[in-house]
Image (cartoon, rainbow, N blue to C red; front, side, top):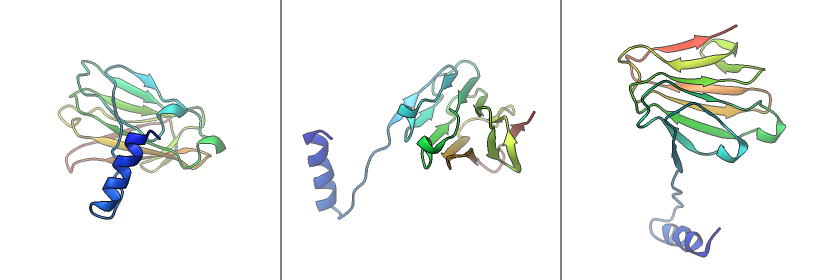
Length: 137
């Protein structure tokens, strides 16, 4: 941690008595495969002009407890795809993918992906009128 970030964290603790880390946000306008360096980040689709698919790496003991948050900002399809073992989501323990793809129900849809070391749990955060689509083999 840099001296500047250490000082900022110290000031946050003094002013209000708590640490308030900022989330790192990454914008992707095309499909992307998540790597271990991406764990703990928030990915958005801001500016995308076509569908965006985020592919999670295989779950394993090395990424047990890691997370990634995905937020759809464009009115484009956003899909979270699993590795070979699939993902656990929305009443399906071996889904291939989960998506926001229903016309006019895409913006602000989000997914939180959390690894337990065996699979990825993908939890949708959606508004009342957004439809989540699950794809299984």
